[in-house]
Image 1 (cartoon, one colour):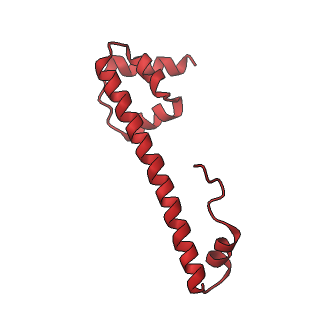
Image 2 (image 1 turned 30 degrees about the horizontal axis):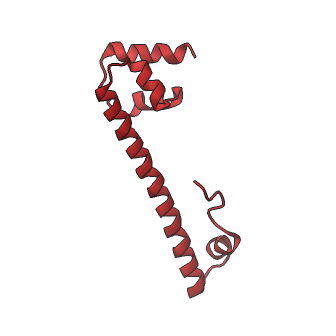
Length: 105
């Protein structure tokens, strides 16, 4: 995210140190949280658009699976997470090729 300091000291103090917030502090907290949520949603939507474009490109492309992995910028830890948490619609040959690719790195 562009904004590395998500919560400023005034908002932090209002949330964590003061038992009760003034209406003004409460509004600042709400506004700040909404801004953070909008930033996260925008980044998430861009990531989804990127994934869809990669999928579209892969569908038109006669490249091998490793070229797609490279184009995606997939990391070894991301690949392991995908294998663990998702049902991946690849054949065994492609999965073996990706596993070998990451073992050789």
